[in-house]
Length: 348
Image (cartoon, rainbow, N blue to C red; front, side, top):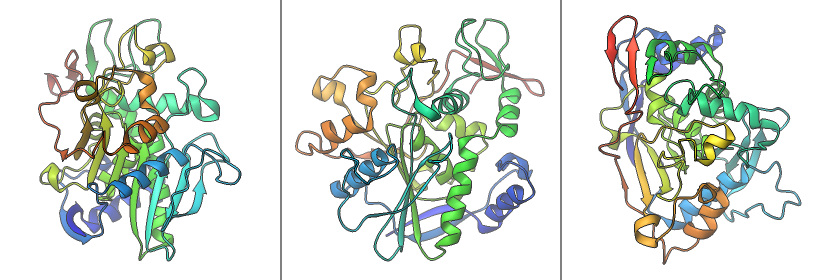
């Protein structure tokens, strides 16, 4: 149990009103300068408890698999967890599963991340890439003239980007984030007395975090790209102090996506058509320093959920759970200058 803060019920109801009227859910659309927060006492994930963290991590891996029936690589979560329901497997968009305890008083929504393989992403690969490049690139995934950008907010070939253009594109483009909001609302409406947590790996973790920030829902992610950049562009409400946000991001320093270095012409992300440039996280980060403490080399293969589970989390003597702390002295997109047609030149 613990105390956190979340946006007030009034503000959240106004968000739901946007969707009901056929609009995308965006805090900016409410036209309010500040958000009212309320304190909430409830059941929180114990990020210092190894079995709890392992169970959540295994849920994120299972979210890449359509079914547990006959799947040899499906993780058996053990008591008290069961698969409650699944979502998205009949379409080419957001996918995952909902896990619950026996009486459905505790639910965990686990979002699937980017499909395995940077070059062959399966049925959701194209949409995964659009969402990754829209949310985690500095400016429309504009890397070079050889790339097809996801928007046209960049200016020339310099590191100059029109910020209000970026925000307008996010305001008008339906993203996985919007589908994830709908899913959370559906689960919380069907189980009004249940405690709901969110989790996910990679893109799935970032989606979980953005939904968690929107509604103040406890969230634990694994190897998520930096979510602070899309959070700012979506005008997410800022709780009074990151320590009060129920968000925890687990990751290690050999994962180039988690630490924000999967960039440049020699990177795996580049060859796969991904611009994963964000590195700063909201809430708290829980980091295994596998590079300095264990001699690992930065390698995109260490990003995979299975590798994190088998090579780190399942080896607690070698890799004890790290302390979760607010990420300090972190800046995104330092090479870029952001101009606003209303306010002149500024940087993030």
